[in-house]
Length: 70
Image 1 (cartoon, one colour):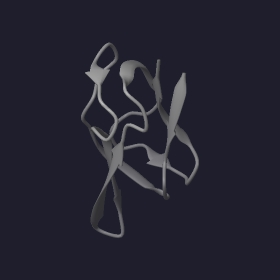
Image 2 (cartoon, helix red, strand yellow):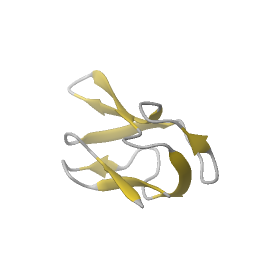
Image 3 (cartoon, helix red, strand yellow):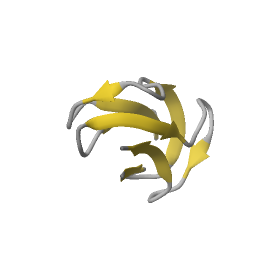
Image 4 (cartoon, one colour):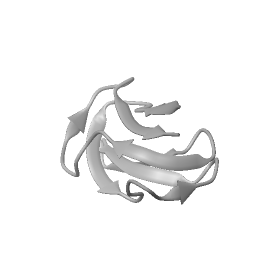
């Protein structure tokens, strides 16, 4: 199980992956918006998306868990 965490504080602008999706390492899962910049959050490992812990529009802090990959 791999937890994908926010690299910085910001708003969840777009969720690209969905539970059940098979993803590859480096594939974008979520795009955060911070200071009018878009920050892609990639998968740190290949696997299946088990859970998305946030919704579009949510504010997250650095280190918050966004996605769980199995």
